[in-house]
Length: 264
Image 1 (cartoon, one colour):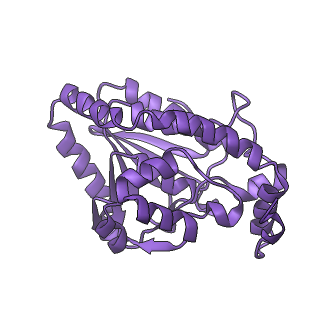
Image 2 (cartoon, rainbow, N blue to C red):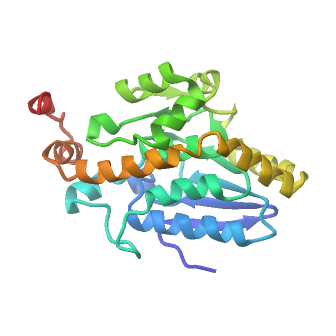
């Protein structure tokens, strides 16, 4: 079994439970975190005993708050990785490509890149304490690939634009009403509910589920091209003065000054 630092991985019955384990950083991910998530998802893919994958966050406060903006402010990137590249785009594709249903168990705040992760999962179960939203335009970041284009397929264009443009946070009841989550449960029942759903999935034909997932994905697979373009753009943008201002303001706990970039 691979030793992990930023996540935990366990197989419980038919479910692989992948937990982002950086509660001190509200489960924000750095490069190492993404590398470990990719390894965990590949392990679950290869394990014939695993029929569903549960993605959640450690603690009660956060599911995942996206990229570690403090890390980016300190070093200008998301830290070292095995490949030398920040592999978040490959993680997005892996969540879609793994031929087993992926269940997001959202235990707290899911914002920014963490919000994108839950949107990409096949099903989302939310704790009553969960909060959903985007933060990219507030901290000098964006996801113009799956994080916006696929989100619009989930909640519709108007809601997706609202989520991105306004950077508000929405409670679990609102998220369920919008179709952003499948259902809401009490916080102390969240993981049990996710495991129960995984057990229910395990009663179904794995081959038919694989074909169904691939069929659902086929309608939006062209968005992978947008995702590649968006990740290239984001890499350039985060090193621009405007992108650096957003990260610096977040780290310094002040309001960013984007006015000077209005007509740049």
